[in-house]
Length: 604
Image 1 (cartoon, rainbow, N blue to C red):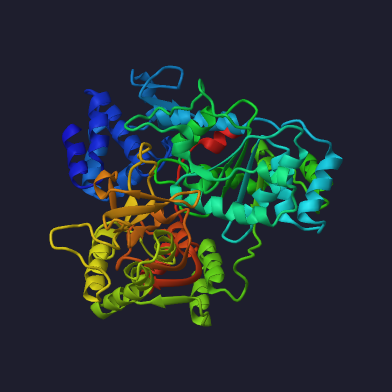
Image 2 (image 1 turned 45 degrees about the vertical axis):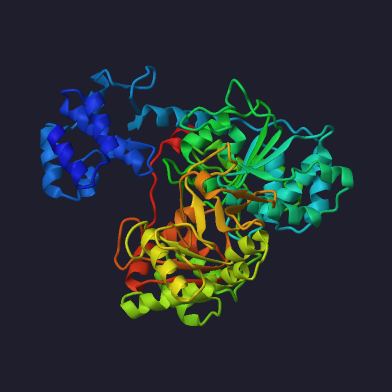
């Protein structure tokens, strides 16, 4: 078995980590070795667990090598009942500290089983008693949201005012930030004592955008100066909030040392993986309110789990009849509850926002996002042929097509580089850089981040927009993205900076911080980083760009999914350029992402 798993590793079906884990806990038991390698590989692919129903030859390592798959299955004696794993010392039902847990017909890594249990227990908390009179809640909500009979934002605020945890999901431009600003205003007005409110997001870029957008929303609210002082001044990253420690899984803030807050708002919650969500929950004070914001249809987190997507799957059940009556009384909006057998109580803590205030029927970006999200190939084709001015689809099958895409990149990045050459301030250069961004599905190859960044650097140099010294990777105008947290420097994974000369003529890398200030760092002091003219779609989450360009590879690959295309489209505020073969694009739209977990089953 060990040699066969080694072959699977050499063929890329397993990671070296999966192989070593299987050897470490499997001993001489071929079934246990195969199960351990399999569940470890599933976790690496983003799944929380491996359902026993999928532990068949047809699903083994996606059958990329049928002959090797069959050999592995036979070496494990063609198991028919994986429950026999419970006889192994390395497996338990969770009552023992074993590396693997087999629970509810699902096989887990122990750490993911525990994390899922923490999240499930937290989400199972019942409603909090109404801390304020219902009449007063209605009065405050009417003041901030008006009195229309249909108002999703008002309902979302009422949900959050009456639950310890609330989840608000919506696509771009549906008013999530506006809703939260008014919700926080309502909480401040209703609370007899000052509230400690904290804003957080998974990345520095997302935190900065949350700070800016909430600040703009606050300025439009009818609040006294004293009430406005109760609003948080800036958002932070989740790593910074929890006190992430270098080279350690343990956070500074945890169950023994909880956070000092009364209300926590987490934006871009789709990016939060299961272990991070469990860490966040563990660090919450007993009575704290939590409001999760995000778009359930975006890409799930890079690491294991799709917590927001799992939670929002309950929305199809609608509100329970008592909850619908309560929300109708608090908002004046028309609501109808549903009696559903085996309904999840969490459904009463959800609100899905669907009306877009950014993209109307004249917006190609909005119409394309809707079509892709539905997996509707015909509608997507109709959008492309409609002639919308804000979207374009360019073929990418020949060298001239590829060169045209590079020429477009010169045009896109010319403004910030020209501003840098003319002596513009770091703030101005950073803001202009964010007006245009190339996104990729891959990391390697001519259609990936590494290949595109090198080719873009070459064409920008030929255009006279940058000067790259031979043998030196640092030059004025180089954009970089931080790839690992460095709390000492105050830089976190996803932060983007640009190299430029400071007032003394020394080359520094300038970053925009969440509060709008700019930080300069010596290039040699930066944590691991990479050039960022092109970035992956995953890395772009939490950001928006005036003009977004998506480059897809020339062939259909497993990494291409409906969620990846939708996420890239919704990074664009004003214009979208898509470079792809139409067949590759259609295949991606037809391929929704699946993340396997047991979270909803543990909530039922």
